[in-house]
Image 1 (cartoon, rainbow, N blue to C red):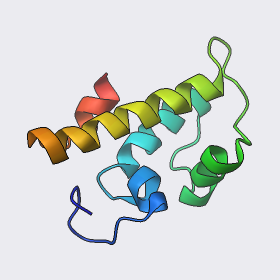
Image 2: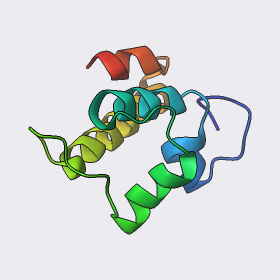
Image 3: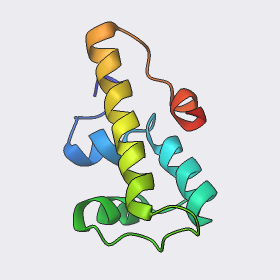
Length: 94
């Protein structure tokens, strides 16, 4: 993994299990779903099976998870192509 330099980059690691990306999911679940820390297996299940947590009052769960996936994707490829360091705190604040 080019983000954490610790693991082989599987799809699960790329999306959720990377130690640099996991804090983003924890912050997301804490803020929207009152569940921190969530289990990585639950987050992966929400992504791959689309069995999402209940919608918060003002936004759909699919929109929340989709937005986070997009931001993680963007930050990952900024590191690869533009040499901009990956920052969980920047994703969380956006």
